[in-house]
Length: 185
Ligand code: ADP
Image (cartoon, rainbow, N blue to C red; front, side, top):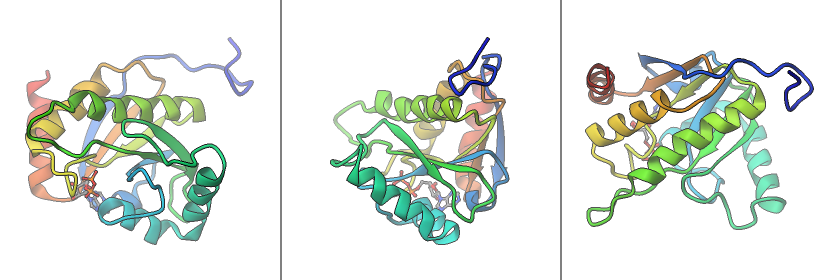
């Protein structure tokens, strides 16, 4: 069957989840997911690390998106791809997770950030994708909830991505994801 880019569409399934403790900017994968903010023009945490290590080509591509298709920025729960610049990956998929709110259930938006990232990965033809713990830093999600939503969403999303590799920056975050993987069967 012809795929969207004239190639052959790969078999859909659900990605295999792997966990790694480390720095996502060194991940050798097709696409690295960035926990960006709506402005897309850089920030702290993993966003800052990706722009520092990936060089100015990523910021230039983000500026171009703001000039063209995303003048108001990227809405929460959506995803968009750019070059990966000097990173070992081919693409960066920028997504915006929700800020955690005590009095409102925003889990659907966090799930959407993962689902949309996988959808964009499929459009690109990416087969290996590295994810950080979206919304688990400055955006304030309790680690257990952030990990559970990440793991259950990726496990239940139809995609041609073979490997979803969570690259986790501290033992605490890694342990939360390991527990989520163990308890989601
Ligand atoms: P958010 O604003 O979505 O909460 P943050 O960047 O503040 O995003 O944090 C998301 C997660 O990314 C946190 O667990 C943080 O420790 C982690 N992180 C920060 N730098 C890196 C990195 N270089 N590689 C992987 N994860 C990182």
